[in-house]
Image (cartoon, rainbow, N blue to C red; front, side, top):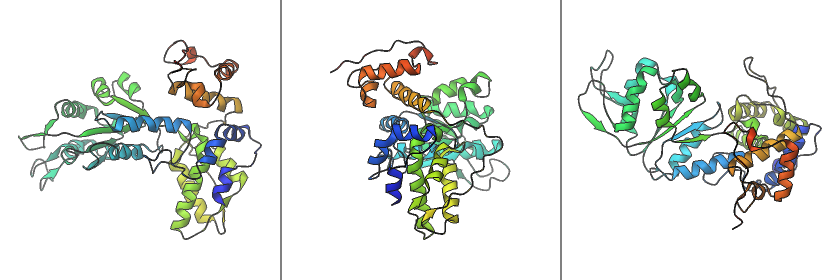
Length: 362
């Protein structure tokens, strides 16, 4: 019942919800069998074009040993993607070692990563193996890498370049071979410009960037995520949730979600707690005082955003077998007309003013 309701959302008054139904109707209906974005990413729920494009990039880089920098706002699922990259890599049988740089005090980060010998400093009562050593032959995931203290960054860079280090208090040099995946919600480019982050370290980390979309940029995934979390918490609380009110679902779709998927998960969990029957009782949503409101987009705005995502994915190739028109299921002439009507041109993109090109038909 819950599945059927989410796969055929009734018409709503808001243009934003109408846009979602227009752009995602076929996707939502087909996803009822499997609402995961990719079989390779079983923990990630969604069917939106922008999410699938990002996960395809992650899937491709996972097969290599390249350093990956995962970018995205808080709550977008950066650690889930990092774990999936490790699981799909040739190092899958080895350790996945995680460290949150923001949660480690600046004075202890060297000890946490390098490890230390007994007596290396006050309180070092025994040998401790650091994260670099623990991740040897496996994957090291450094979350919130933008919070690494500036004074420690040269030492970190040396380990990445030379693949060797010494534990604190030890003269012995240790060799390591780990795959590095990092993540941050900060703008590292701006930090480099303001001398808060070393440029040489940034370029060492930014080998293959993967930028996760905010939840407000993939609203067609909100019904699927709502169903997923409702069923998850209902099972955990021994409840049976079968449906959600149309007005409540529309409210979830139109809300900008500054906390992204994590915030939606928390709201659904509270809602399941409040629900006393088989209809999900939506809990009040309170916006943090310092969060920036995002206005619901219009139908034209949603369509424009969807077309832009397809164009960026195809590197602005419009026609041909692998062009944006084929990706969107449109005729080339129809897409060109929509681009003209919506004011879409490559010149408007910050990357430059390249011309729109055509891909070969075979």
